[in-house]
Length: 466
Image (tube, rainbow, N blue to C red; front, side, top):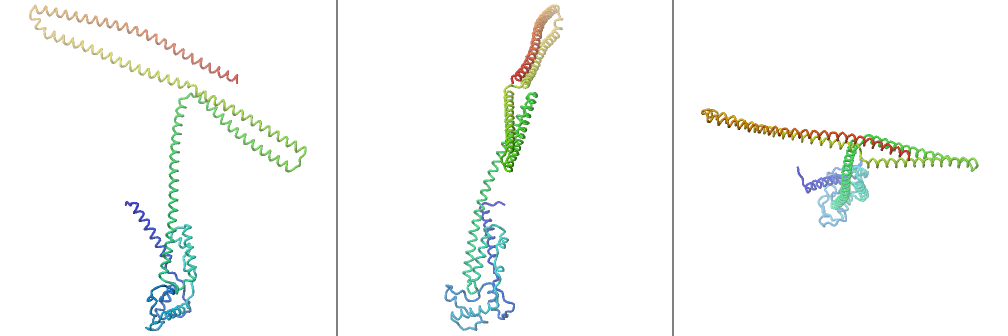
C-alpha cells in the first residue's frame, strides 16, 4: 500500500493524538479522595447516598463553588427532598447554609485516603506511556506535586466543572509543549545520526578503493617478481631478512639497555637513600656510571653499524633497480627469435603455396592445350586421310606441332636449369649465413662469460676496498 508523505504524517499525528488522549484519560480518571468509615451511620435516602458517593470522588451535587461569577438563576436550586424540606422557596444564603450543613454532616462519616492511593506516580505514567525519558518523568512528578498541593485546598465545596476543565486543558497544553520539545530533540538526533552514517559510508568507499589499489600493486609486484632473476631475488631477500634481524636485535638491545639503565638507576637511588656519602659508595657509583657509559657507547656503535648496513642495502637496491635483469633481456631475445621463426615459417609456407599454385596452373594450361590438340587431330583425322593431298598437309601440320612442343620443352628445360643454379647459389648463401650465426652465438657466449668475470672481479675489488 503506497502512502504519501502527508498520509504518513497524518497517520503519525493520529497515533500520537490517540496515545496522548489515552494517557490524559488515564491520568484524569476519577480518583477516590475520601472513604466512609466502617462505623458510620447508613444513609437511607438515595439522593444522600448519591451525594456522598460524589463527595468521595471530590465532586459536588447541588450548589456550585462559592465565588463563581455565574448568572443569578444558576445559584437558585431546589433543595433535595430528603434533607431540606419540601417545596418552599429559599433565598440564596439559606440555601448555601443548608448545603454547608449537609456537606458537613456527610463529611463527618468519611476519612481522607492516602495520597498515594489517589494520584499517579512517575513509574506508573512511565509504564502507561512506554517511554522512560527524563522529561516525561519530570512532567509526571511536577503534576503529582501540583495535585498534592491542590488536594489540601480542593474540597468538594470548592470544586467546579469549568475550573476542572480549564485545569485539564492547561495540563494537556503543557504535555503537548513538552512532547513537541522531545520531538525536536529526536529530529536533531536523527539528523546527526544520518550525517554520521554518510561519513561512515564515505570512509568505507575510500577504504575499499585503497584496498583495490593495494591488490593491484600486489599483483604487479608479483608479476615483476616472477620475471626477475632468481639469484638477485634470493640475494635481496637475504639482505632484507638480515635487515629485519638487525632491527629486531636493535629493538631487543634497546629494551635490554633501558632495563639495565633503569636497574642501575634504581640501584644508584637505593644506594644514595640507604647510605651516606662515603668513599666506597662513591667508588661504586663511579663504577656504575662507567658501566652505563660503556653500555651507551656500545649502543652507539651498534646504531652506527646498523646505519651502515642500511646504507649498503639501499645502494644495492638502487643498483638492482638501475641495471636491467639478464633474465628479462634473455626472455625478450627468445621471444623475438620465436616470433621471427614463426613469421619465417608462415612466409615460407605461403611462398610454397604460391609456387604450387603457379605450377598447377601451368600444368593445367599445358593439359588443356594437349586436350585441344588431340581433339583437333581426332576431328580432322578422317577428313585428312580421304586424299593424298590433305594427308600430306596434315602430316606437315603435325610436324610443325611437334617442333613447337620441342621448342617449348627446351625453354622449360632451360628455365629449370636457371632455377636450379639459383637454388644452388641461395643454398651457398644460406650455409654462409649459418656459419655467421654460429660465430655470432659463440661471440655472444664469450661476451657473457667476460661480463660474468667482470662482475666477479668488480665484487672482489669492492670487498678489498671496503
